[in-house]
Amino acid sequence: MEPLTQPNEKTIATTRPKIFEVTNLNVYYPDFRAIRDVSLNVAANEITAFIGPSGCGKTTMLRSFNRMNDLIPTAKITGTLLYRGADLYNKTVDPVEVRRRIGMVFQKPNPFPKSIYDNVAYGPRISGKVKKGTEMDDLVESSLRKAALWEEVKDRLKSSALGMSGGQQQRLCIARAIATNPDVVLMDEPCSALDPIATGKIEELMTQLKKEYTILIVTHNMQQAARVSDRTAFFSVEVEEEHDSRTGVLVEEGPTEKIFSNPNDQRTENYITGRFG
Amino acid sequence: MALSTLNSGAEHAREKIVRELQGTRFDISGFIFRFSLIFGLGSGVLILGAVMWDVVGDGSGFLFDRGWEFLTGNASSRANSYGIFEGLRGTFWIGVFVVVFAFPLGVGAAIYLEEYASDSRLTRFIELNIRNLAGVPSVVYGVLGLAIFVRALDGFYPNSIDRHLGSTTAAAGATLAILVLPIVIITASEAIRAVPQSLREGGFGVGATKWEVIRHHVLPYAAPGIFTGTLLSLARALGEAAPLILIGGVLGSLGPKSSLLELEQLGERFTAMPLMITQLAKKPAFIGDWNSATAAAILVLLVVVIAANLIAICLRNHYERKRS
Image (cartoon, each protein chain N blue to C red):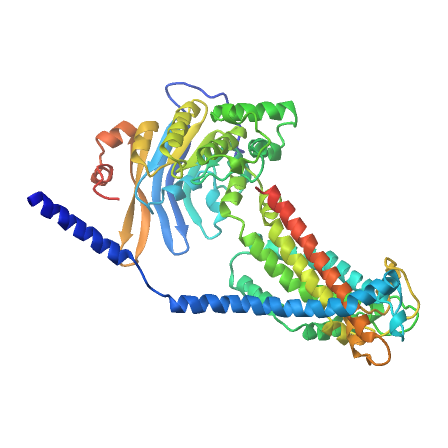
């Protein structure tokens, strides 16, 4: 098993390196199979959107990329998920190391009940790679700047993060995620709890961030997928009447433009044109 | 003409709506419900107030007259020279045992049950049993303490002035620590369960280990609930009399007086405030002012228990401020 290595200088070449290679991924919960046989590649510095109706397993899929599904002890995973060639589900892989490279932003803003500064500084602090003092101050500032939040909070870094608006809190969570200098940022419906103005800010931010990071985003909002993503993966639900179970499957994946204008699969077309889901 | 009929039609419809909206409903069952709630609250407050009034009225004068002497003196056969020091000392050490043993063990057990244990049949069985243990009468814990800490561990206590089996301060403290352990576990478990999962995910999401998530996020968030629950259980332990009687607490003077913090007394015989109050209450009222002495002792125990609760409230507020 080769150890996970820090990614090298990010190349902005036309042939982008593959960040993730997923082959025949299945996630099982005790009473049903959440996703079945998903195979998918994700390239560096792109935004990949996962869309699909409720219960299609797109969030489960997203949480497989940084082993958040490990938090559900009954979940079981088969298939392979390579991150820069390394098998994330190899027994010797430490999920903590995975999550430091593959950060996550959640559906509901979930800042820690600490100060704005401490929220951003928390990840680097526990990794022990950044020294207290000016080095940490600089990192907090640059993370907040990247999250387009610095100007709004620079005078109240010591005040509680819970006093911010929902949109600010979500941008703080993005700053918190990028403060650990991750390679990939996973976003699970990051705008579903936000108003349109805050949503616009986050979307703008995503297109900025993809210069440095690879972004995977789950969204219910198809316009959002169309606006921000380079590639789109459409998931659907297969309902088995006899077992009364639902399974998520990847219907198709491709350039966003193609998925939205000329999809290969009828199910995708139906979903996009609003005929189901 | 057509317009006016239209207008009068609209006016008619408006009046009908206004009539229908004017309710004259008298909600009799709602009224009875509300009244019975107020009655419940009122009778509780009234009874508590009456008890307090009685105790303060009987005891405060005595307490102020005797003052420091009452708190630092030893038990005596005469009411006006009686002191409750030995009881206070025993109660103090029981509190120490509860804080030192029951709190860490109970909170530790709660953390394990909530954060580490898998949701298996065994775990659920253990949880159910802990809940049942919390409801076991305290006398039963007295029997348990008698069997374990007094009889079985007798040989471990250093022999002191008189050979008296193991009815020691340590046995009393350990018994009451065991008594409140299930309550500590349950309240701490509930406080930990109330921590939002999103907070844990936020911690894991930036690469925190399980221990870091628990230490930095779960415990600070659960702290107010844990402190409230544990200190309430401390108050309960300080007020227990029945198990102490069973494990052989002394209902009289202990003899030579050792100071509050002397560790030696852990291996010596003990008494405690609830035992003293029991004893005082049994004294014949016509020989001396035992009535007032009893009330004064009750007042002191009440102050101790209220102080424990106040500390709980202060700690809860402190940690609640920290998490907002």
